[in-house]
Image (tube, rainbow, N blue to C red; front, side):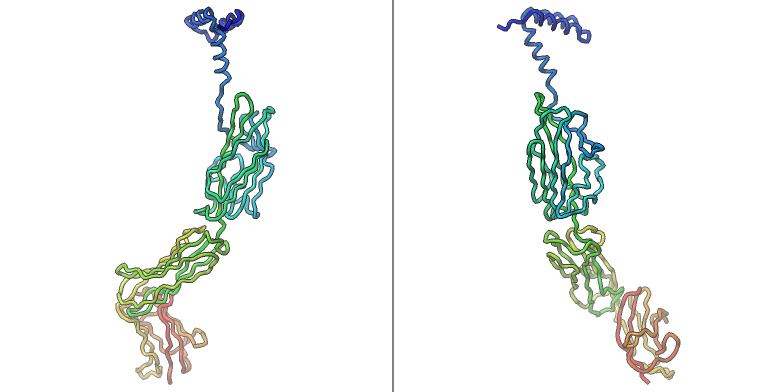
Length: 405
C-alpha cells in the first residue's frame, strides 16, 4: 500500500480548506480521505486536471508590421512567408477580400489563373522557443494537383489549378487551405488557421450578335439570318476546357423552333452560324435568337433575341421602271406597305456606284413615292438605280429600278 508523508496530507488539507471558502463537508471529506492515506492519489488527480488543456485551438491571425503572419495570442507560433511564386507570371492583386475575413495570407496573392501554379514556402517559429511540428496541410478545393513538403520548421505547398476548375466569373472561391502546427510540449497544443483559396478564369469575354434580321418581312419572303460570336474583351478563348455549344433559333407564331447548333472546341473566335433558310408562309410575330452555353466572364451578353413580324401580303415595289415626263403614266416608283407590319419605314435611292441621291420617310397613305428626282428636286439622268427600304433603320428590302426617257 502507498504510504503518504504526513506533511503532504497536512499541506493539502490546509490548501483545500482555505480554497474559496470550501464548505465544512469538504473539509470533513478531506480529513477522512487523509486518514485513509488516499490524499496523495487525489492530489495527483487534481494536478493532472489542472495541467490538461484543450489540445486543438483554431486561432485568429494578423500580419505584423514586419510582414510576418502571427497567430494570436502572443507566444504562439509565428509563420513567416519565405516565398510566394505564381508561374507563369500571373496577376497577384486581382481579387478583393470578398468574404470580409482578415485571412492570414492576402487573398489577392492566392487568386490563381487557370493553368497557373502556386508555390508557397513558410517558416514556423515560436516566441517561447518551443519545438514545433508542422502537420500535413489540407486543401478543400478541386484542382489538378496539390502537394506539400515538410522539412523541419519549413512548409512548402504547391497547387496546380489546371483547366476547368473555375465555373463562374473571376474570383471564385474554390475552397480553403488549412495549415496546422503543434507545439512539442507536454500539452501538445495545436494551432491552425484557414484562409480562402480563390481561382480566376482568364478567358475572353464573349458576346453574340444577330445579323440580317429585318423588323418585318412580306409573306412568302425567304429569311437569311445569321449570327456571330466574338471576343468583346480579353482575347481568344483559351483551351479545350472552354468548349461550348452555340445555337441560332427562329420561333414561328405557332411556337415551332427552326434552328442550327454548333459544338465549338478550342481556339475559334470569331465564329459565324447561319439559321436555316425557309419561306415565311404564316403571318404574325416571329423571334430570332442567338445564344451559347458555356463559361464566360460576362453571361449578360451571351443571349440575344430580336422580334420581327411577317405581313399578311407581299411587299411590292411597282413599277420597276419609270418615265418621269409628267404624262401621268409610270411617273413614280411606288413602295407599297399595305398589310405590312412596319413602324417607321423609309427609302433611300443610290447610284450603282453607291452614291446616295435621295432619301425620304414621308408616307402617302400606305406608300412611299419616288418621282425620279434627287434631294434637290432635279430629275436624275436615265439609268439603273439601287433602292433600299428600311424600317426603324434596319434593311427590309432592296432592289433595282430604272429611269427611262
